[in-house]
Length: 422
Ligand SMILES: Cc1ncc(COP(=O)(O)O)c(C=O)c1O
Image (cartoon, rainbow, N blue to C red; front, side, top):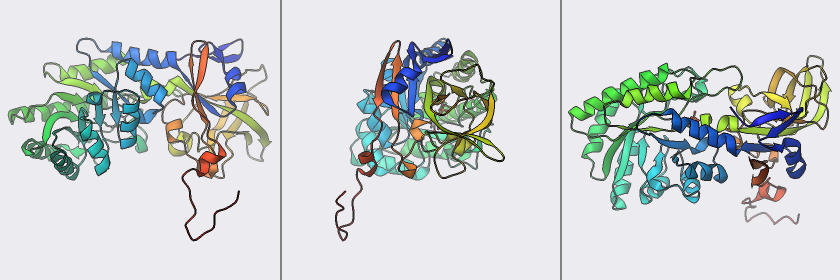
């Protein structure tokens, strides 16, 4: 459920016509609905009956500070995978003790910053990382709380690029090695064992993978109990899927029940790290049709947003619905919606039956709230687009469109070349 709806053939975000925003900020731009974000967060929270889990919004899905600030205000913690996300999270007012930190390649300065802020826990992804965190905590005269991120070897049945809990994936530590890892962690002077963690993948549309993963983690928990290694948290990661096209992800209540069952009677506090399910359908990308073009084999709608702005179709063959912002009564066309970039993977949709849009019309690319702006780049020296937030009948820019100077900020010529005059 989201708050992008048509009123008399004009697409609105909550109470604001999308055309109105386009006139004001230009195109392309990302547009998010605050009411949708709030609804999604509330629905997930309310899905859990009994003990409330700690919901740690996964910053990587959409790390705009306005979005982070909203989740923080609604009581969320934060899941991070980089020092930059820690920086954003702290700037957005998150209490460090609600921040969990995963990632296979944590750098020493990132580790130091997280220890310095006394985050809730590091989700450890290798024994070398564990040893380094122990060493750095010692050097900083602190104790670092940790969970081991288990790789439970469970198939989340999602796109291979967003599958993270199989043995062949780089993530986590396998179950057998994890037990040894916990023994080692327990002996380390600057480590406090706090949890057991996993994150098996993203855009997961069935509950079975969660059930399997949770069963493995609980079995490990019992082994740890037998070894007198106490654990407080069970962090089941994120990954719950959304409907982009025809997917039918589980109901939130079923998802919540499945995870709550796993912790029942254990005394463990559940942590979840949702990203996509909170923000995915709360955002769209608005782009303008530059040209229509009839090739020999295909019809093309060339738009002003490229794969640098939305790379999910190129990266994952992801499906995004594409809709005219102002509907017409003309019969639909079948076309590829393509961007201006010099790659054949630069498309938003292929062979799509869609509204018969014309040059200058606006298109809405739906389901673009997660892993969309966050993955955008300056490829082909294209300034990154603006982000806009709507709440009711108000809208505001939450990230300015980049300009040409932004493109070269930080670049400099080597000292043996003269400074250009332009
Ligand atoms: C460790 C971790 N937690 C949570 C998430 C969020 O996943 P999703 O957006 O599918 O909920 C990710 C995504 O990659 C992740 O790597």
